[in-house]
Image 1 (cartoon, rainbow, N blue to C red):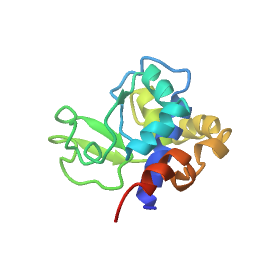
Image 2: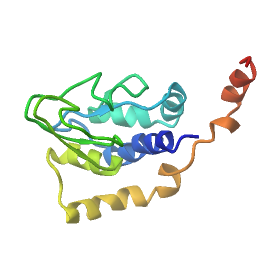
Image 3: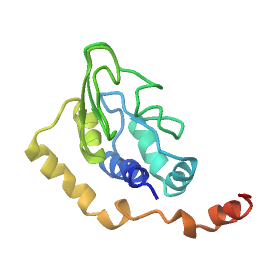
Length: 155
């Protein structure tokens, strides 16, 4: 399993924990899981509902959002991204893109700005209280529906 994919799964779960019970966030927040399998599991576990209620825009699974191909921000804007890469104009013309964790991105979306270290340390307590669930590895090779489909694929 690609470690990048595992990080993305945790992104959606961690952001969901931060945004749980919140609505009408003051910023635009896009969430795009890496695969359809991730989207299915996140839906079944209720994370899509939490993220949707918060005001996050749910995108199709895949990598185009993290590369800036699917959505771009207003010229001169600032963004927090959970991508593993950054380069000039990645999310729009003259944009400032900072890379951070899912937790930080969700907290900044709630605040409408980049938060301070003390603010982060206070809010991360919510995620840490549910760490066993948030950071649980998704074993797709042990989920019956996925194993059955994989068995039908001819090499």
